[in-house]
Image 1 (spheres, rainbow, N blue to C red):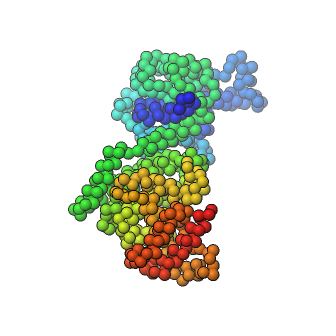
Image 2: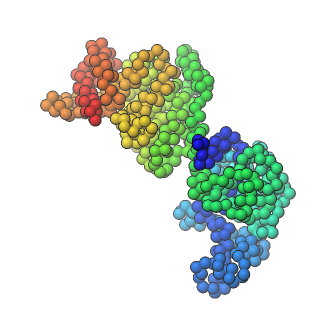
Image 3: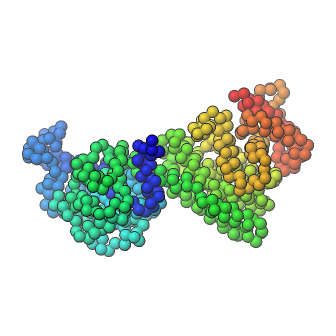
Length: 594
């Protein structure tokens, strides 16, 4: 069995991804259907209805059947429009009402760019699609492109073609074969569509010869000039994919056979192009940074960290990577209104990890070999990522929470570097660093990004990732695995990374508990209430008995307890540290038997 058997969409995605800028899209009226802009057939039937009503004909259940019975022929868009309006200006005026949205329609989201238009625009912005051919008169694709900051080269007439930027120099080359609905030179009737000007034919011959093609929303039945262009192409160097909702008509079948096109069954243009754009984005994000580039980034970080005179270069390097990360997050397909699914969760987690990895590795290096001067820079990076995440306020809770996952990864990476270097005072200061919040008081880093204190940490969500279904601490386990895969950047010789990771989490738990007063803890953890405990996030050490025993013994030792207290942990109080250990033991006892 083939890996991609029955999954043509993934096959197209790989073709588009691996051949960046090679594929053109050919779009028909079906693309704008979900925007409630009618197709040619729907306009035809509505024109039949309007003419008949003007002649006093009563409402009919089937206007096509009535027209055939009355005239002796099938309704024909070209014939009917030519009969009603004798000049291009008249025909343009008729079409205007079917395409231009009213204020009420705009408010209702009608006759505005659809998810398909937005997905195509995102593919253009990312450089995967550069040429768009459409038979549509509307401006939905132009509007979607401009929302992405792209000003397309629009060819909607022979004059426009003569003055257009060359195809090879254009970021997006949009060919509107039938014209624009606001231009009187639109092509509507069968006679107008029987042949294109020679300059159009030359352009189409070049595009169809030099590009792969994705067809969607075009029946292949009308527009003989476009059919002829596809039939006369001599070359098949790149594939043709034809998205179909239902069976292909006779005209489409002929073209599909001639071009050896691969048919793609779709539920609609929106689902098709959204799926294509998401898969291409996933392929982009999941293609990890070149190991040599990552090695160079880590080496540069270490070199700039080694001498104070390199501080400017280090700051510039950090700023560059932050800018690159935020740009990637903005380009990624991560809308917060998307419906929940475990597959979508897995995809988003992978995207965020790929984007965050360079910065996470850098911050782990800064934690491992820094001297404290890097502290403010790291905190600023995390604040920048967190601020970017919080800038989106509406959507599904799970996706809104996940937006700050890159900040969580950097929180863990820098903290692990500090633990590896035994920089206990800097670690405590890091936990105490604050994250600004719009309209509210700032919140400690450890209260915002550590395990279930983070708003994206719902265990029931993280259990949907492969291998975490039955874990007691799925987020902690997942972060452990991610950090273990990045540890070569900063660990050095470390026989037990698992214990190192769990030491970091346990110290974060201690810092979190410092929000309590010592008196409150005395009351909560009184010997008379042996089942009572203070709320405190706890990771893998809650059930991992070997690490638990090792860490408790270490924290209870005189040398480590003095070191932690001197570094600011436990509010500088030995009794507070003792209360923390009591609380730790109680939570561990509960989690161990869950």
